[in-house]
Image (cartoon, rainbow, N blue to C red; front, side, top):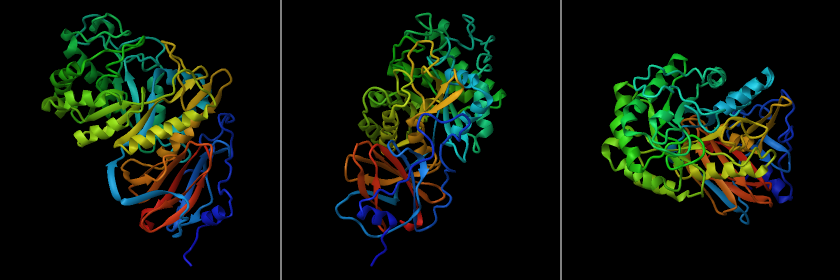
Length: 496
């Protein structure tokens, strides 16, 4: 008889094999380990074994290791299938992470030293944190700043004699530096402007739309270079830039509007050449940085111009509006040489403390994005206060960690754990591999890491237990996934 796994035996007996985690969701005691679980690494997953890490709403499991089981070869023909083939490889993964905003930094500073360290460890510690490797920040203010501000607010100062990042030195830079001190492999940081200084814009303010005045296009391009140089003086390397946050959004907070042609021309004639003259051509320049819905139309204008296209590394996008995942596949079909990177997503409308559906929304988006060629995924604010702020426009949002600043307490949300199922086990340089599910209620994506460890992330958003065969060309493992849960399965490539 071919070997049967312990999991299969439990399944045949009608028993679930997952055990409960050790801490309560959204109510970690002060000073508790950020992950709420044991050391989360791929070590200990030996050849011929299946490692499983589980987060489940009703089992109180949060990134919790399950008993390691033996890989089997016997399928249960009555079950659905999640099939993987590590020989079929696609895009390389750049990384995962979140955003350093002034709001996040101010919230971080309001916490006591223990919880300040816990926040940084929760995201950047390689042993018990989410191990972020790709992060975003803002140039000038964004909506998640305490107020509008620019680095140079002296009207007409095209030579940028009054340029200063002094505002960032109060909170934002200290938080970034604290994270870099913990990050074992320093994360890549990219920066995004929401608006040029008010004096550079047609409406004379940083909010409510407006466009970059043509006479200030060169000064605005120089502004990017000066920002990179000033951050370098602080010991912080800027890996990449997006040229404008949400260029089609006319909102009550910081923004600047561009048509596709205006955006193309600014990059082609000003920003691209200016970065090159400053010997910053290795900085990855991304265009669009708005939702999936119009990304193909916008990219077609950008990339049809060979000069503009030469300066642009790839396309950044957000998750707001409808899913429109099909546009990512169309984008890849048209421009396979241009990477796609998810650069912002969050749950708006307040803090949503204790909302389990938030984590599921993240996991669905990440799975769909990875399966449609995204090279990484970057969340929005790393941490916010109990109101989902601060925010000078009062458009409060949630974050994976909510800080109760009144009681110096950290509330880890479902999104923190769901995101961790990807960030902890899919490392930079991993390759997405062939992964398919036979049923739409079982969502899955898989990657093989540089060390040969295969990570398969499977999501069940339904109320019912999902039963399926985790199958490769050589192995089969019948498993069960509780309702409203996510699991990462770890296997050695040599076994598959």
